[in-house]
Length: 182
Image (cartoon, rainbow, N blue to C red; front, side):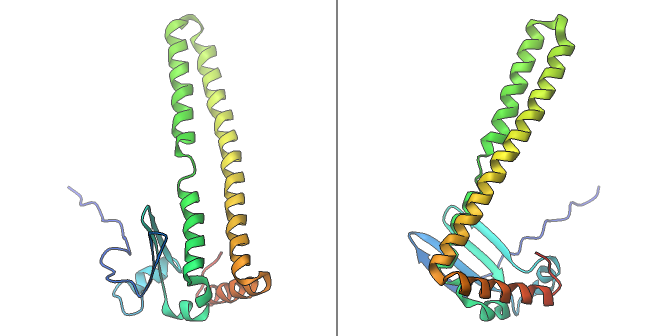
């Protein structure tokens, strides 16, 4: 029997946060990966790791990145990112689960009641599910654009548009030097 490979989780055994804020009951933590055994594995995959829970927001990154743009990791900036990622991760999962269940259940009920027209109902149900997923995609995409714009607006309030653009350009330059793509 083949052993299942355990999925890599960089937040296992990271220890105490290097930078910690408590903001409105939320723990906002920054961990530096410098000196950890798994640093190379993390950096091979991506530049930062983010973990969001109901009680907090944690980010793992290199100290050099933190030192280059520390303004992006202040208490207010981390809270704004928490709000954005919390919105992103909780984007109405019931829209994806509930819709197909209702359509599928309705289609099953109709097939059961009117088994003579089973093909028409089956095709109708498939078309209904397809249109529903198209609509849900459109709604979620709009919500994500709005959430991203709200994050940007909140960051502009903190730093001003020119300063924020400078910070993001500096961060992008570091990412490109390390071979990451946005």
